[in-house]
Image (cartoon, rainbow, N blue to C red; front, side, top):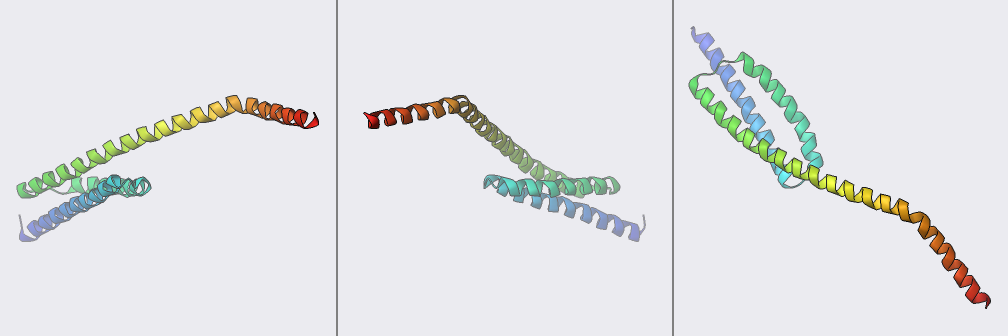
Length: 136
């Protein structure tokens, strides 16, 4: 292997590892957003996270790593996945929470629909009672 090929390989390895580090940075930020329950911002970040993952996947297929770079990649991946698992867990909890809120809201709406017509007639009866008391 020539010196230029070796330098090119090292450069490609560094570029790949830098991409993994950028992904780790992104997922750490997303984890902070999940901890702060900033859901809208988290979802916005998730979109660009997916784009980064796709770009990284393409780059990863073209670069061969030496043993030191493979070890570093494994460390970065482990940290990325730890954050990702916790973010997903928090998102599932939020989804369940929103589901319960929607269910309560639907029940309230159904109750309102069921009893609103009766409330309207009760108001009419109260008005009739008040009118009859005044006239007596």
